[in-house]
Image (tube, rainbow, N blue to C red):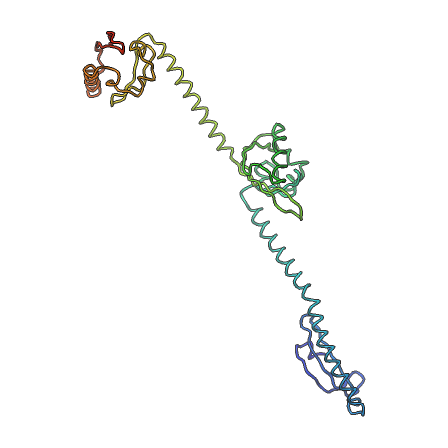
Length: 314
């Protein structure tokens, strides 16, 4: 047995535990860290019934062989199961290291019952750690009540494989009651053999504030533009704004009425589109002189409108 356990196989003659001389066959079973020994007394071998002894010896060898085969087949699934379990444990360890160390918040829930949260989402929502987040009664607690119906609808559609946004922006409620804007990326995953929803959360509060400030600034500019246009349109005298190439950029109502044209028929056009060529050339020379010298002088001019009537401007 010592030789079999040492990985050797063969036959030997020696004394057994009874002190009788025997012929022994030994074989290792490495996969079970064991050995098999079959023996027969030498006296039996020398006896007239040697055939029976040989048959017994061969039977022992056959049993040893098939025993090793059977043990190997039995142990193979066990070893494969152990390797699978180790691979799963390693995969889970890598997943946790990746997710728990991520700067993006991660939440996993099933029907809004929280299953997993990392430190990043706890920081984003103002909680001390993931365990405190997981103690929430429902994921809906982090969303405004006004959004609950919409969030539920999207969740049901996503589980069914229907039409639901994979990415959207929403306000979340922090532990202290303040609000934080987040961008959520959602996906259906398998968690412990059942469907669950994984959400990756990114803080976009600064971006939202910047967009709001820009929109406010644009709104003010639009209001100022409408105010200035109202003032200029209601001015009693004609007012225009021209580009350096002679195109009208703006014309008020008084100017358009004096020519019998609409403002749309003036803006974007040049003086040659509105006035006779001779008068348009004269106005063009005057405008170029003002641009060159920078001196704005009051100049009285006269022309004809679209109906051929005389008009005078200063």
